[in-house]
Length: 481
Image (cartoon, rainbow, N blue to C red):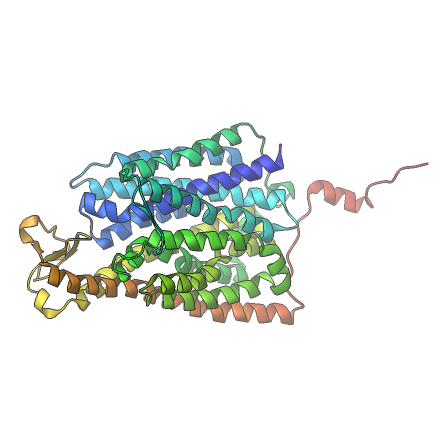
């Protein structure tokens, strides 16, 4: 067993998950055009990844100790490849939505299985610095977003930073989806060559019954509630970023490029989580993070220029940088007897939250866009040429597929009015989510005050059976001269 190789393989597996996220977000508008899906439909398709993650983490976490982390990663690789192929070869017509959702669900299962394996692996390899190393490991989530986003944009639509534009190579979205296989094959090969350790919980002799009993500790239940809100705040807006920011800037700025920028920021910050956690405590870090993320997301919904987009995205990126890995780090440090089960359950809760918030954001996007359309345009179904965005008006049921004969393409002067309405709807999708961190500020602040009253933040350490034997035997005998 080589701990360094195992940690590197874990990082590359997380990069693969990040590729599925950013590439899917980048091609989401293309899928809408290619398969005739509304924004709400696209929200449901994107949410399939998080339903898959939630399901695989809920079902797979209790089996991690039984199957072993190596087999879990092999299953993850299989799901990643099936999800990619299913999306690339999805049929058009009535089956399109189901196949796209199913393929995204399977790829999400791969992401969930990766988390099930790599989180307890990192906690086992570095038992005395869990929060730090989980942050370093999860730095490769934004690292993967940066790498995948830059490559996908260059191969496809090009890189647009507002003041610098690089033309893309113009490859179709199917080619971009195929990029996910590259890091997938690498982590599969690395895992094949290594022997994996037992998880910390198994090595310490904690029973399966004790592991499940940790689920019902009141503080863990509160922590799981916080995971609902942190996950929705971080990953819901990120998945919609290409659609929303491109709309609110009227096509003048790429949301994927903003996601790449904030991911670079998060990648750097997560490498310094250890010193910050020592200075502020992990819960103190999260209190500040919730404050910044709420302010940043609200301001981002008002941005209209490259300068304001970058400025407000910086505040948002600083806020969400430590959310996911620190939530897992505190879980591993304060509830170590829960082992892979509690880490998987936290991931499941987070992904259920994201899966629920994505179609809600799509619904808000559609609803607020329609509400902002001038009355003179509400006489029939119309479409914005640039984005192929269909307004379902004039009494047409939202469940009815609108055919070309029912769509009116507006002249240029009316297109501008429709684009402004869509920009308003896009902004509101962010603005509603920005309310969630205000609840987190209160909860995290109260937990931090409680910790301070009890003498400060205190991780719980488990010892292996061998260490326990040595402890009760009076330690290891020294050399005799």
